[in-house]
Image 1 (tube, rainbow, N blue to C red):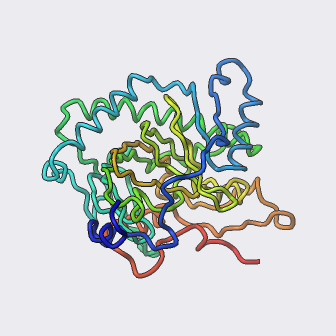
Image 2: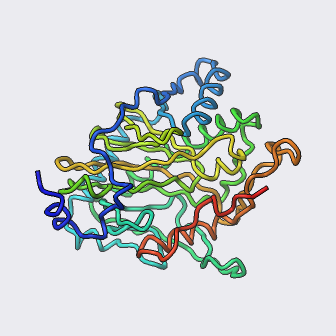
Length: 353
């Protein structure tokens, strides 16, 4: 085992977490994390399903789904294509590198909470191009288009990705309907916000890390989007924070997806459901792969607590409204360099009474 001084010398200081956020290399088992069987949609037990999802959203902000309808062969083909892309040389991968004017593409120096993550990613949008705000300035009405950058290798990457994205989109709308019903809303109440969506799929590769006690694959964070549908391989490393402040491991279940409630649903629900803080612990021996689908509304959507879920006397709105496009572009600007201040969060829009 390397001494702490030797370990710190082995990795770039930009990867090193503050002492209070460094991971324990053993985490509490996640046996309690809810597992939701979506086959209930086919056999008419939707009321029980909606109740179970509501309970999972309220108590955890995270659950796993099985019997979700996504073809398992497609998931395996997507996983294989992802590995083939990341197995290439850095020069080849950087042929589709993203930049400060286009957030889609390959990136190997992303920051979370102003600390560099031990990973490399490839981001590809569901709608090509996606339309987004040109700047964080509230007065600036100019829009910008992000175009996908498609890898040339493997040759069938684009075809497989598009098929996978279609299945993710179908599952996302199915889950959105169930979450909406669990809030006492009409099943399609939230659909309108996703016309012209800014959703994207991220391919994550976490190489082995020589100092997993100092760095994180991804630092602690909450997803800014509405819902995340995550495929993770069998290596493990994803951890979620309980409301008690304890980190627990999210154990991979074969053929399951992990579902995260994002910040947007927390705001829409006026804090009834809370976005879950999570992170990825690095591994000194094994590489890890994952594929999150980040389900996001159109750039012009103003996110605020839904009127049906608020009451000026009993349950007043807990958040001021914010524009999703402006929020998103502010977040993207922080991916390239350390910032002097905390990156934008929904708590910056919280109302004080």
